[in-house]
Image (tube, rainbow, N blue to C red; front, side, top):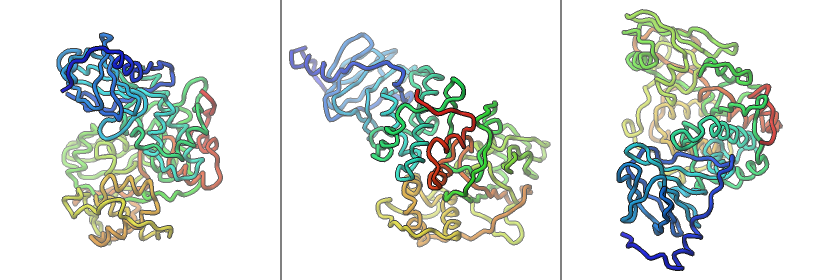
Length: 463
């Protein structure tokens, strides 16, 4: 525990060094790193300076645990500090094993505390891009991601206006952000090359959502989240992508489908049949019709997907069929890795290969992914390093080989024995498709043409 200290000349000098004045301009963003927790532990390679809500300054050493200690106050190093508390250091501050630029702010969250990272917008993007797209992809694809991520962040700042004390979260609820740990020189180059460039519709910042793979065409925002935005209508991809989720398949039991329908507001009791209702102009289902002992109800396909699990039903671009239909082998319900067989191992041990995967190999890899063979770190490694996908497949097949199931074409299924969903793409489908962007860039499109394709009617320019 730190002992009380006197404000000697040396201490005053230290505080002047670590308590750097913070800009409050419009290009700063605030990111919630730890929401409503009883305590947080923070560290730095240099001394951490704290300034509390009463205007008092403290030296907390190079590491400290900060605990909620009562209404509008926290304890740290044997001292009581009034909230909000600002933390800064000459070296990057660290939390949860990750280092961050800018400074930290701790606020009262009503019986707990929230830790917030406040930093410059462009520095924030440095911790985002690699988590959302592979920086080794074509530079024009990475530039397009930088621009839509910048626009998304700025629009969030204007809309949220610090609601709950921060503008963005560090997860998929906003954009995945991992601070300095996620920085890469290639994404830095894309950010610098497009510095300050945003997407607008008229005089307003555009809403620029993105997803992994559209499956061949993007979705209309009205069919997914509701509302009308003329630049967020569905568009067709001009070229097929090389996404590992170009085709996928999953089986759900009748009870799983019934539970998802109930959660999505379409409780029909014991399910008898599920069929596709409306489709958009590209064939993507926008509604499903459920028939059961409690009647017939229509539900948005997006609402059903989210209720069933967005990593289970990977997109709304699917067909449905009865599980175990004649001539087709039933598909195993995805299981956690530990429930089926051991995890495949460390990502650093996976060999790379520049030889393209065959269609059969792609299908095998997709089936293994659906069955939960790969953990989150391995899936991210495959996304970031496509040349390791074949290595993951070879290693996984040493443990288990899934049955090969041919693609279906039906649009309705009896619930008896479960239901198979066969689809393409991954994500909500609205806005920019990341794998589509990769393909367009490889076909010679620059970032402006790519963005205008996914958001027709917008303009691109400086903030």
